[in-house]
Structures are given as C-alpha cells and as structure tokens.
Image (cartoon, rainbow, N blue to C red; front, side, top):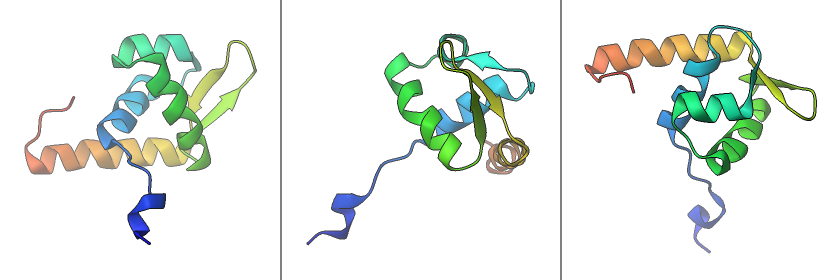
Length: 92
C-alpha cells in the first residue's frame, strides 16, 4: 500500500494568505477573508477548519463565522514572513 495515499496536500501559500488577512488580530468573516486573500470560498472552507485544528486560528459563532488568529498563528505568520525574506521570495 502506498503510504502517500492517506496524505493530504497543504499549500503553504494559502495558509500564509489567510493568516495575512487576519494578522491584524480582528475577527473576520469567511467572505471577507476570501475576498482579501484572493481565494475561492471552497478553498477557505477547506483551510480554515484545518488551521483551527492546527491551533493557528479560532472560529467564533455560527453564521457568520468569525475567524481570529491565535498567538500560535501570529508566531507562525511572523516566521513565514522571515522565511520569505531569507529566501528572497516576494510575499504573496
């Protein structure tokens, strides 16, 4: 059995773009995140729960859901900014 068959693909650029939008530490609704990050709603709906499981965001409310960055998420975002800089890659 191929071990990779149970793996999921994670796009770090998508994670960065979501964290970038919510890095102001204010609650944002999903539609606002998708518009500002240039993502489809399907992508946001896939990634935001994943980011919550990883402890990078907190989801509040039901409709509309409000997404906030956690301290861990802010640290990861800051490290990603540093990594882009060290690699000489333009921030998306």
